[in-house]
Image (cartoon, rainbow, N blue to C red; front, side, top):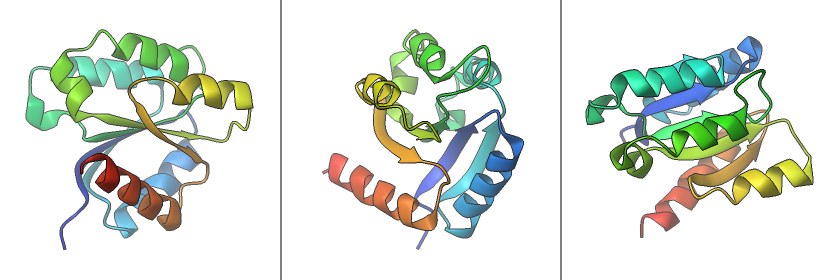
Length: 138
């Protein structure tokens, strides 16, 4: 069986979390390519630089909420101005250690967010995500 996704973008300011989450994604054959950005700003710059090449656009974006300067909320606000092709292709999953109900409710209501996962990412949470995406695509 092939990978579930071709490209995944992992956006988190915590390098240790990025390392662990990248390994879990690799070991579970979840994606062919994993792009890691350690800030919301660098993730937005990356998307801006590839926005005209649909093949470079990630299928899935794992986004942390709590990051300095450009947090998950600012990222989603800026993401809204990207071309429709990007917003149609890239699904956003919040991957956060925040257990603030206010934060979770505020971000899960965003039209681009399809799922919320509490850190750390695990093979089980990836399998639940696969099931959710499969049901969305029916």
